[in-house]
Length: 300
Ligand code: AMP
Image 1 (spheres, protein in one colour):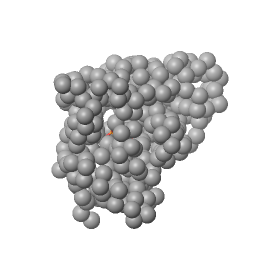
Image 2 (cartoon, rainbow, N blue to C red):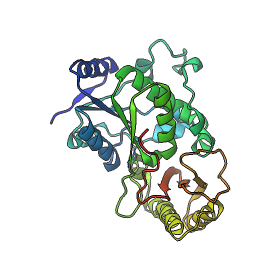
Image 3 (cartoon, rainbow, N blue to C red):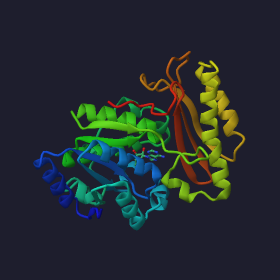
Image 4 (cartoon, helix red, strand yellow):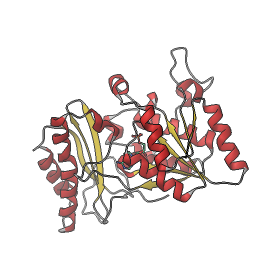
């Protein structure tokens, strides 16, 4: 199947409107490109549950605090189109901040602050603390996409657990779409697929492996009966310390009762979350400890 690719968001909006006019359902997968098998699983799930599927490819400047991170974020549009075609996507589009927010930018090209959306309570701590403004940027672009495309369902990865919680809450406040959270797709090594993995050299990759090792280890501890968040977090730090990593956090939360601080426990539900830097590559991953797979954030 040859997918439609639009560089002008107006054409994407018209395409989505035509889908709605035909009474068809639309699945939407927002991405920042540099697509990998993890993105493909979201697209495939969307094709199973909707008549049409569209994907945005937009490296959103609003969600990057560090300009170096934004500049070095990998981009490969040709490979992206091929991967989307293989996964059964019908339409992909991109655009610029000015095209997505016409008349809402300041003279320097930044979004006027009154158009930033409140990311809500799930933005507190962890990613919210280490990447100030990040979830505001995510909520703002995702909210805008929901507003202009009006998808039936939107697909997000458990890989970005806190983002999935923020977006589910946002969609509820906006009265749609239905947010579907898909399981993290992992390499056979256990490492989560991530666009940033392409920036890891051999040493970085070796170091990065300790992240999934710490998460799988924490889950094994949970199955052995450990319910104390402080113990689980201590264990993860001890594994991460064996790798050449700069750990930002290795923490436990109740995924259904988000809290700024790690709860005291003992817990009946838990998700373990890690962010660490291997060299200058920032990696995040997480795992639900309290069920057999890692879809911590259920469909909302
Ligand atoms: P990104 O392009 O990094 O913004 O990711 C776009 C979507 O793909 C987000 O909802 C991510 O959570 C999701 N995603 C990224 N990596 C994976 C993965 N390994 N497995 C499943 N979903 C993923």
